[in-house]
Amino acid sequence: MSKVMAKRSRLRFLLLGYFGHGNLGDEMMLGAFLSGMRGLAEFDAAVISGDAGETRRTHAVMSIHKFNMLAIAAQILGSDATVGCGGSLLQDATSFRSLLYYASLLLLSRCLGSKAILLAQGLGPLRRQVSRRLASLALRSCSLLTFRDTESFELALKLGAERDKVHLTSDLAFIIEPPFEAAPPSGQIGLSIAVRDWRGAHEVAKCIAQGVLTFTPRISSVRCISLSREDEPLSEWLCEQLGSLNAVHIAPTSICDLWKAIDGVHLLIGVRLHSLIAACMVGVPTIAISYDPKVKAFMNAFAPRLCIPWDEVSAERIVECIVECLDGWSKLHEAALQFALTSRALSKRNLTLLLDALP
Image 1 (cartoon, rainbow, N blue to C red):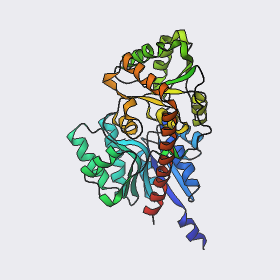
Image 2: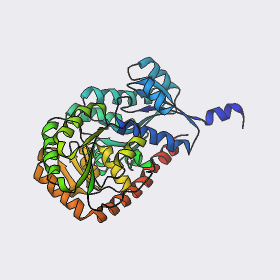
Image 3: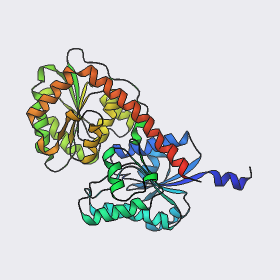
Image 4: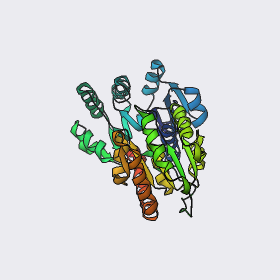
């Protein structure tokens, strides 16, 4: 093969996502994509990030600040594909501006000759009519769409996505191989809690604390985990509410740190989606507090009875779910591991579908 042909065979990606904002879940998806692709193809990747320097240091890739539009356009021109790499990019819960930003990049990519692709996405919520129209336009501009839950998959079809381009897969984070499997409790239990700073979060955290304190004699340790920098004050406040249990606050900055934070844990109460995914991967039974459709969708496929809607959280409901987890620990453990195994295969399919969609 000539040198020219060899160069053309090396793929070039521009990766979109909520990267460089101190959110470990997003960094997990990016890391999973990069590590998974390295086993399948030769490629170069540039990542759009809120903190380009941090992204370069963490993932050893080229990175462009998200508001450097000239550099982004130039990168699109040289890319085989512009890839929404996990997450929920088409939604207006964060803000309408966020939806407009990512939809515009997908549309620009198609105009400039780079395939627009969304991988392992959640879709929605789309609370405005204009949001649904914009998302529909973005979806129809894509050459490939894969979604991590049934609800998002079905919504994409309702919004006009072409059926032969849409696939149901799983979150990219499932590609990561966990280093251990959770062990059953023998006597006292270890507990992790991963909250999110959301509307009314202190009231939700207070209910969690009240429910957990009911089990004081049985709990050996509590770790309050912050998967995002914005959650750290709330996690520290929750530790104070759990004072008699000597709860500790942990703010992991890498997936290795996250594994350490849940090693030895027998039960996790989580608001952040990727705290639930990480627990599932090692077989830790989880109680989810659903602030967003993506959390409910995840638990619907795994353990819907252990998903508490955000507006229905109470100490009594927390107690009920903890009792159910402890009484049925072994069955929930096996169900989590089986779900993670199935999800890992589906997650890897994101990458093969991506390669199949490219020349």
